[in-house]
Image (tube, rainbow, N blue to C red; front, side, top):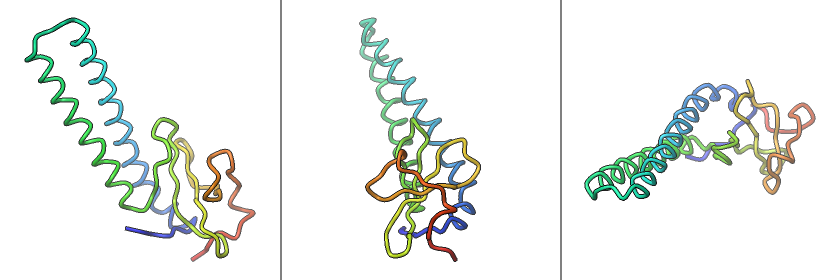
Length: 133
């Protein structure tokens, strides 16, 4: 689904987005642990049965991770970095498409940046013409 967000609508949806993002982080961490466990099995020259079972567990975890990402991005929110906790909400500033920017740990969306800029190009919302309701 494509949605243009205002700062108000983005902040209204933020609690649910935060919950979905926390689920993604947990699923990603599970994938990392399973990858490490699988590598340990390979390094220990363990039997095929143990390897195949762990590989199937990893495959399932990766599938769950990607499905969780799809569910969040179906809201129109774009994940820029799971590791850094960066999410962008599509918006408009006058006639220009821009991103409203949120970083994990922030209580609300307070920044925006142009489409060709990243996190380093963030600007405070107070000084913008980002669309209002």
